[in-house]
Length: 293
Image (cartoon, rainbow, N blue to C red; front, side, top):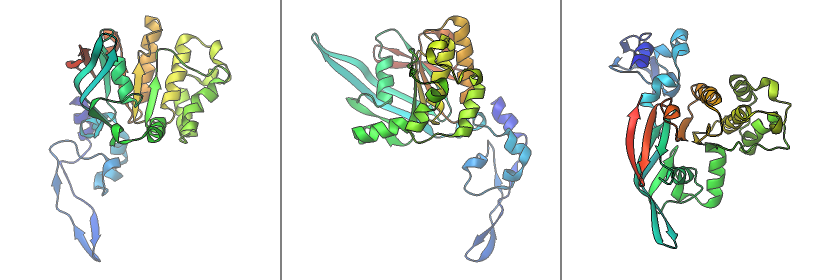
């Protein structure tokens, strides 16, 4: 609420649309009154007068409009079961979950509660038995394997507990690997990530020459280099000590503040979960809302 209020301070209460051409005649639209945040300039079909206000545009950020952003992830009544020697094993039992653009969500639960299973389903690495998953407007169950692979390459970023860097490549090439594979390499964005993650002095080194915290920073940069719609993180700080974990998590959240990428993170740590915008708990295959910041 405070963020939205600060964003609104620079705008007039009423905003008049500019003069439009309509069938060869000038036509002015009526004054529109905003009782809440007006549409973000980048999302407007018609540029209102405030779009030329340089100070207002400088105040604009993804954080200030998240309440009006579209859904990035929609999990609807998802079931997943496996066949075992002891009979059917119901891992997920009607899970419903949503995530808006730019939002961060911690997924918690005991071992075996289905956290990793849900993450794999969202990543398109496994298929639901019932229900549906939609990401950035795409229904995963309506895509074939080839379409899923191409979609995953461009729309999903993955960070794991294990760093999974390519040992034969220097750090600069590891960072660019995913983006080049997706055909989305952007030198300016790459430079921004390198600066925000503090990797400038490490680019000519190999993974084995880096500490655990440094390797995880590289893994985060690699996952975000292609500007994915959704970042999936499975215990990304699980192999790090508490101090390094805090540093890496803060860097991750700082970088995400500069982009519309949403974050779904699996973690056992309440301390880590408390740093994200929301947290939910999986228990016996069902979801319970734990809290919201």
